Image 1 (tube, rainbow over the protein chains, first blue to last red):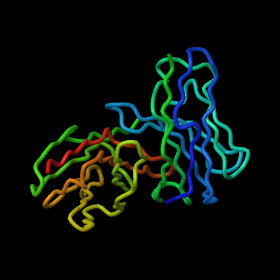
Image 2 (cartoon, chains in turn purple, red):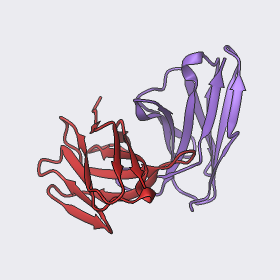
Image 3 (cartoon, rainbow over the protein chains, first blue to last red):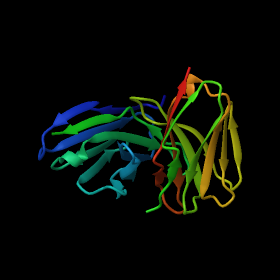
Image 4 (cartoon, rainbow over the protein chains, first blue to last red):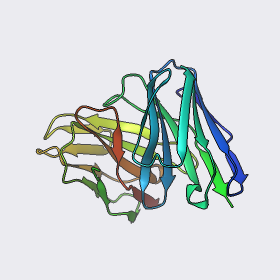
Length: 113
Length: 111
């Protein structure tokens, strides 16, 4: 299994509070991705990174920010959580991007009350 | 936004039966991947197809990429309970690093 961990694995928070999710990899892969998974929508890309300090938006980036100060860590921040951000969040990594295999972490289940 | 529609959304069949699930789009993709996801886990890559008309086999699973690179199918022969899961297709677009995921087919194989 690819060395990807996500923390926390479960979190319950209240509307309006800031939340940070962490993705950590031990594979030294260049590309890292944050997705959210909701029933009927499959996986939707929030943000991705193609190197340290190099990030770009995905299709559902509003309300989310990311940072990548080290190759191994990719942080996803919800500045002010809303109930619509209740979801399961997955981090993924890939060596070369595009057609290369994406390896997924175990997911973080976030509930915003 | 490029969309990938998967059908059926849900499928429940008896062990030993054959099945086909579909992944369709109006857009052309440079390649297409199929993933399987089990409850409580992240998706795991099954196969990548990159050439129009390409067929790949993985034991009892057969994957086909449409000639026009807009659609794909996954055929399972003699389904087994271990095939149960959420099947996701994902298309790669020319010129960028992102995958577009389909809506998924949730497959249940009844022993």
